[in-house]
Length: 270
Image 1 (spheres, one colour):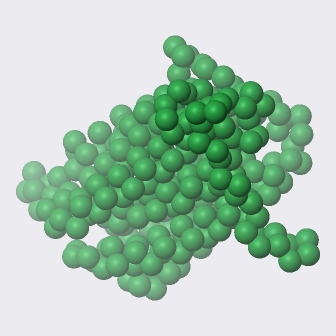
Image 2 (image 1 turned 90 degrees about the horizontal axis):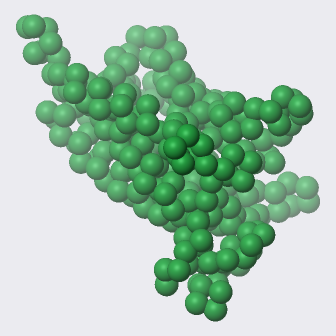
Image 3 (image 1 turned 45 degrees about the horizontal axis):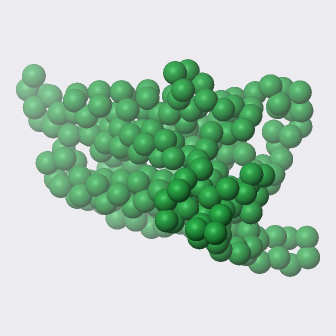
């Protein structure tokens, strides 16, 4: 423990006025949506334009509901179904924590499909632009996990290992939240931005969506190697974690979308 880096003394509550508390985790969600909306408006305007600025504004409400409802239901169904079946009222207690990325992703997919159908928008083209900004929220969310001292890594003897204050064992661990912030957030964001800003790639509708799904899935599988499994789940099939098992279908679907993506003109000729 003497060789571990002390965990910074973060207060998970940013501001508190009476009973009202604004937490870093909530701020990460809000800031991620705002920054994603700001950049997303610029992405949908790239040629060929896939939506109007007004439609991009309207989409924010849809995607916010998809993130919150999908993330919460995903956590309930994927991670702790037995607990919430016995305590169903706790499903509504979102302030107690408990959100799952894979559920949030499914919620966003459903919200995007419904929105595009209502607005008569090209679903894959619009999805490409949306996917290119999602890593912003992932980066902020992982940073919030680190600030909260949660979802820590497995025991480690690396020089940058940390002892997390809520860890009952109080042993040096990988700061896996930061690993995931770098892979799922920074690296994936840069990769998708390079792709979406190329006209030839934008013409291959669905390619950026596929790159996001495969890229995130791969980053999550690698990140889970360093992350301590949830205590109530542990290791599952073949020693994999729930996060890894849920990410494998993402990788396969992502690769399939990338392989089938063709420019609209070529598809029309065929």
